[in-house]
Image 1 (tube, helix red, strand yellow):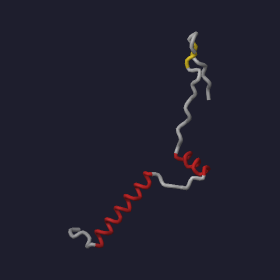
Image 2 (cartoon, rainbow, N blue to C red; image 1 turned 180 degrees about the horizontal axis):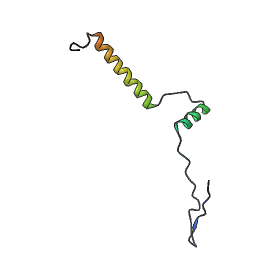
Image 3 (cartoon, rainbow, N blue to C red; image 1 turned 90 degrees about the horizontal axis):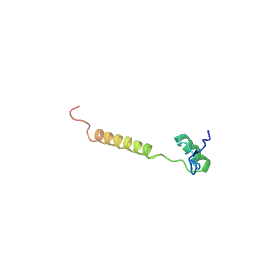
Image 4 (cartoon, helix red, strand yellow; image 1 turned 30 degrees about the horizontal axis):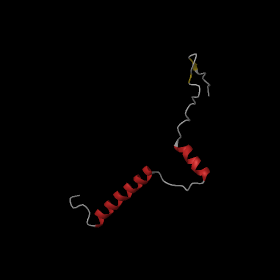
Length: 73
C-alpha cells in the first residue's frame, strides 16, 4: 500500500487525513467471516427465490399431469 504525501498549499495540507477505503468484500470472504463468527448457515435471498420458483413450477406441472394432462398434446 503506497503512502501519498498530502498536497501542501502553504497554509493547508490537502489530503492529510485521507485513508483509502477497504476493498469490497466477496461472497467467499463473507462466508468465511460468518463461519468464523459462528453464524448459522443460511441461504441468500436470490438462492431462496430460485428454489421457490423451481418448486412452484414443479408443483404446477405435476398438478396439470394429475388432473388429466394436456388434452391437445
